[in-house]
Amino acid sequence: MLSEAARDYGRRYAQFLSDSPTSFHAAQKVASILTDSDFFRVDPTQEWPATPGKYFVLDEGALLAWVIPSSDVHAYAVFGAHTDSPGLKLKPTSHATTPDGWGQLLVEVYGGALYNSWLDRELEVAGVLYAKDGSTHLVRTGPIARIPQLAIHLDRGVNQGLTLDPQRHLQPVWTVDDPDADIMAVIAASAQIAPSQIAASDLFCVPTQRPDTFGNNAQFLAAGRQDNLSSVYAGLEGFLQSLSTPTTHIPVLAFFDHEEVGSSSRTGAAGPLLESLMRRTSAALGKDNDRMVAASLCISADAGHSVHPNYAGMHDPDTHPVAGRGPVAKLNANQRYASTASGVALWEAICTQADIPHQSFVSRNDVPCGSTIGPITATRTGLRTVDVGVPMLSMHSAREMIHIADAWYLARAAATFFSDFSPLI
Image 1 (cartoon, helix red, strand yellow):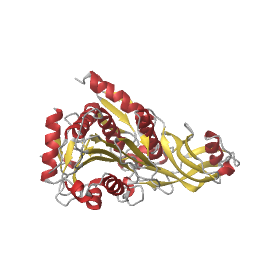
Image 2 (image 1 turned 90 degrees about the vertical axis):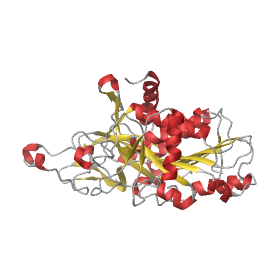
Image 3 (image 1 turned 180 degrees about the vertical axis):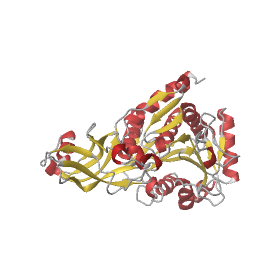
Image 4 (image 1 turned 45 degrees about the vertical axis):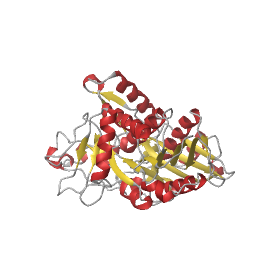
């Protein structure tokens, strides 16, 4: 039975998903929530804060937040996740008309999207506009496009195998017999600026269907972008719940962009943001940063795979998580995940303290796994890191599925981590 506390968490999380169609919206939403909790936005071009307080840095689709307590500190407790999800990104030449008069949006695939899941869904255009006057505008159009699948009458073998060419088959339809239609004019109107004032943009086609609960006792949640907003929101809630607890460490939220395309960007995990935050904070407090990092721990949170009831053979037969039985610690002999035995032991202690169930995940030997920000963060910063996450089905689909309890458990683990972590000294 899903508890009322977990159900309430699910409602808050679903609203966060609805408010966060892109990484830019997600980072801004987190910033708004932090601002409402009296966090101060830091300008990285200015002097770094050295006094006790609550701070954050917002940089495009990335956000880092931290708290300097009034007590002496010896370590960082970092909860890392990523704000981006696979999808369809609008190209600079944003639309075209076919010889038959169909107006189509021109997109390229961002990350490892599950192509077929994007068919026959109403899509909006969402993202960020940069205006010539220097202003920035988050935009979303509402339902405006769709990728219609070819009828079975014209593709009799489709149920024996669907093949989609991303260049030819994933361009959304948005109008017909309207050669003067301009998608950028529609997007500009949503920002209340003229199309001629747009200097640049990062825009995505995003499904508009709202998150829905379903199943016995409404235990499941279906929605897009749960990889990896399930981790972002869990980390945020745990972070905020721990604020009243005195600590001898600095709690840090590190939400990066561009994980789904390799993290190699200024605002990705391979970039300088987290390393810079720790170095500048240690210096501002008169601390030896190497000693601080050596005593620290990073929880790298990213979606995991639940065993699939229709494809159980694709999972390891002995070590596979099941949705509803708790967040997973991810392990891989080839270090595709950052977890080592020492990190997993610390994670299990956190779960025990939080009184939540937890599971382990490894891939089949013949089914290679993906990776996360974990190995990148550990390599870039030297932080001891453990990879964990919420088990889900349909990962990288336009509509993924989790058990609400698992997301709630992860938030409780995050709160315990931020409150009770003891520096590794």
